[in-house]
Image 1 (tube, rainbow, N blue to C red):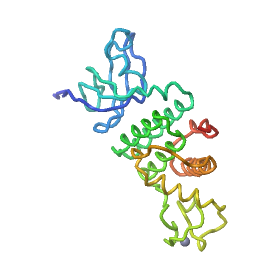
Image 2: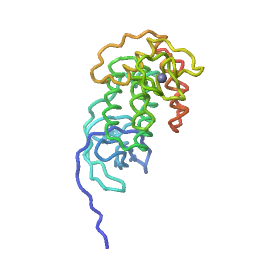
Image 3: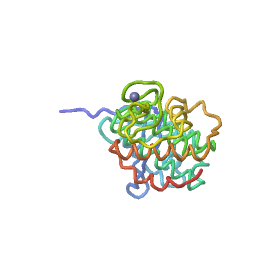
Image 4: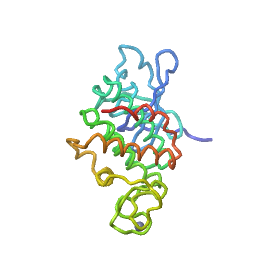
Length: 247
Ligand SMILES: [Zn+2]
């Protein structure tokens, strides 16, 4: 004999996927800091009159009041949207970044169970919503995620010998290298190296303006794309589309 225990909880979350269910309902996959990624039934939410219509949309971010069931489908009681990400959703470029980031961060979460990822994602999306360069924000999030995957880049000193006088970046050595440890790696502009280090340590919340040259932005994007596809084990096909987008 066993008891199915349901409890009512109020959690912050973001809908990362929604699937139609029966005639008027949806199954939501909600990413939450407390419970991870959970399945939630939102009954009747497809009806225009339903108060749960907006909180049950793809990528809605807000507070979810749930009848929570561990290891099973929870049920949405009601919710409050905190951010609709209207600016992101009205622009195909920003929207593509949002879709990619949500997929990428959920994959990293599945690998790492790191609850900080929720704030990283929501803070990053809020900055893109505010109009900041989505490629830069996306790269900052990616770089921070590498730590959680156990493949963090060493951008403080030479990844081989620890020398602080770094000269370029080496993908196979996992970070910066000094001139004694270079073995045929291409040279990378020092501005790019400096900015890469900045990306790793900056608090996304504190960014109010981004002033980085396009060349540097693209170079960093290239480095991260190559490293992530080579070492993370995460399928980043969706990223191909973002590669050549300029803003
Ligand atoms: Zn070295």
